[in-house]
Length: 177
Image 1 (cartoon, rainbow, N blue to C red):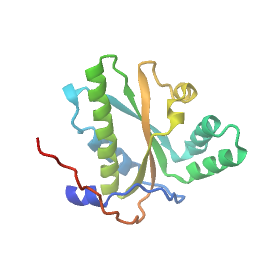
Image 2 (cartoon, rainbow, N blue to C red; image 1 turned 90 degrees about the vertical axis):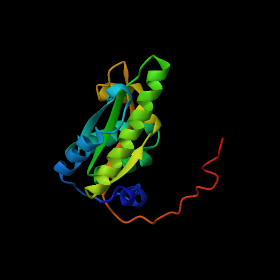
Image 3 (spheres, rainbow, N blue to C red; image 1 turned 135 degrees about the vertical axis):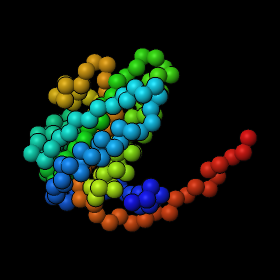
Image 4 (cartoon, helix red, strand yellow; image 1 turned 120 degrees about the vertical axis):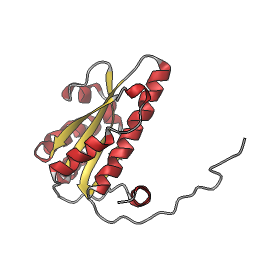
């Protein structure tokens, strides 16, 4: 697959079908994404892979934080998450040095986008999530996130279904100095 094609055609898949994906496809995408450029070769990321058999537990953990006072949304969220093929929780260091922290945040964002492109190339649908419960101490504790780390987001894994192409609105994108 050409890089240009992957960049233009990959879509966030938000209609989750009950599916499974080949673990080797996910693993190879993660390994490829580690080549994402990053400052000082710090590679400030790690991945917690929630596989299909643990999705109900993960969905419940999330729902206990996000929907603890709404039983309908609580149950609905768990059922939705159980349909996924897996979840990749992306974790990284928080550097107290301002410049290095910015570099790491940019690198982790690049890693997540590269990972999504690699998953697409391998026929795996994905959607990046950056929801408030990922910042909750209860989530950090349950996933053994160290004190100098944070969850930057999660990538939901699902079937690669068709999603409509949306023309980009890139007017006024470039200005000349």
